[in-house]
Length: 420
Image (cartoon, rainbow, N blue to C red; front, side, top):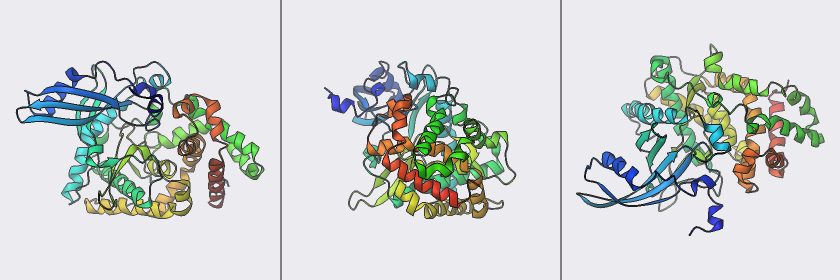
């Protein structure tokens, strides 16, 4: 029996698997994947696949399956990803979305093609885990090979090291580079990937998104040292969601002549990646990106700015941000050169100019997402309650670590002229 403490470690809607997720469902899936018509499932043990707070836009289970074929007895660990079935905030926010259709397209069409292009240049990079099954009807389901038995883990009890962050940024740079080349040469290949976060029917009106700036203004009002920043943020109070959408949807609404556009990951945060280390000396070996549900064509800056807050710790933002962004951009350009891109290569000066032009995306993330990151790091709130209850979120804006982080960031942006 699972203890109450163990239950508190997982999302409530992942404690009990749907009734359809059983041996009868998994047997034909494995039979087709293993090319073994005679395959018989002997037993299935279903458990939550991830810890509370690792994800929100799906429910995920780990299935340890024992089965037999003509070759003997076998076992396999699977990750099953499907949509929420329980009524509530998560189901309401995610209903009628494109998420599974986008992710299936990424795993079955885009990422295999990207890996082929990299491989043709001598680069054996693996961009994703193996997807062994997918469907949209009668239910939205994806099944993946479990990366844990292969030595990959999610970082939950510590920040990522600089080396691990570089590993993640390198994968992102390669994803961006191949897509940049395709968008210039054969854009039709990516025509279906136009649905960013703003296309989720209920997301732009969700209080989690809309109340961030008002909560942030309460913080500014409470700290005399923040007084000089108040006029700028108050001036955005009625337009902040429009500004967020303008940046996120720039490629479709108002593409810029010098804009660098790529197929973005869309949710490039630390819990959407797994890291592998050498079993003997624990040296870093690989990073695997997960969760390609919000991939869409957008400015190259979106993933990079998002990663600044969702991957880097406050210490890395203060000490290592410049070198990490330099590493990302040089890896992006080097990959373009390696895969035979024939056009004019992007340059760092223009990239920085676009980062500045999209600086309100920084401000949006600082006010909407960053407080939750501090709450998660300090383990002071339930992530589901924080997403659903503004009174819980408000408290996060007054955490000492968040206030210190904001103080550094606002001073930095002031020096950069963002408030001029």
